[in-house]
Length: 468
Image 1: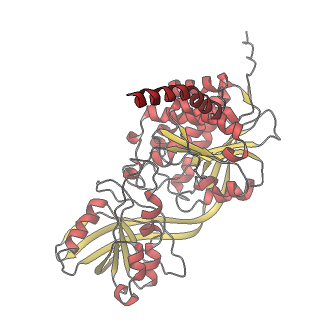
Image 2 (image 1 turned 180 degrees about the horizontal axis):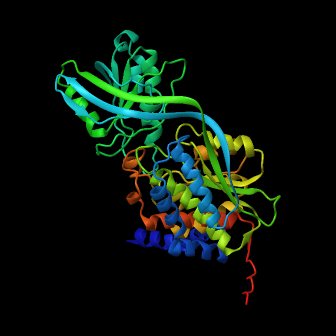
């Protein structure tokens, strides 16, 4: 008993000292600027700009395949919308690129169990021609397995690559499981395959194939390359496990030509100091052609544009806010590269984009963590009431701003919850109904917080007297 009492007394005596030590090692509290907090909360409760943009773009334009007439209509729509919202210096900066378009698509098991499968061509797929191709299906459970296979085993076959991508909040599986799409067609072609189909890079079980870009590199000749929806890929696996040779007839008609045009749509909230570093935000205007591209990426341009509009409504920032609706991101980041070539040497206070859907932002990271801890602390404090935590190990994210960041721009990444993103990514299901208006507003509030914090201060505009 004595030892127990003594131990308790020692712990009690030590508690104030331990508590004091803990307190003194904590970072000093950061007070959020009341103007920043007010802008954030107003966006969270009252934003309607983002919904107007994403609803209008997906309804009045629809799908926006890069370098096609549909994307051109989207640029025209964007210019009109941004001007109507009050942005300045609204213009299009065009660039030239190849265009790829899809035609007829079908896949069918000829033997041993005849049946039709759903399929979609991958971007820059070679064409089978209207008559299609027929060949024996050769199964691989990964890109590495295909890479290790002897060329003689692959030659003349239709390669099928399987995998098992699972949902993740941070979308981390996309890097690993995207390999069958990105690298598989090139490897199959170099080994003499006549075609390739992959299990879609997706986490759903809908009969919707997921398209996406791939390139034929290392001198590989283009071959037909398609994606099966997850249920159909699993059906093909079951058929193959019966142990009999499986023959597929595959039709993927497509066309590629050079010399087409895309472009970046640029708009600004002019700052009071034209020489101050620019706040660059945006998303990409183009989409794949299977749906209206609501989460990828009409929501992204809507979110960042709405945030800039909230700053504009509040007054005039010290620093110019530049909103870019990048063209041709999906087929390889052409818009981001063209922008960096034209503007990469300009001075930036931040560069960031929204391109991971419209579900709530749950964490963020920024180059300011190391370059300016005080600013990073302000961002952390301002975003915390939205349920957003800092990620000290995060990296720059975003194809469209990648080249500008490489040129020296500080970066910020606001990470949306990606748990369900790859259910819809690059599929016919990427439609407006997948967007939750409340979560969309939280995104706008987060980006409004970032722009308000980094704006250099916002001066209210004097009200114009009413004309009598």
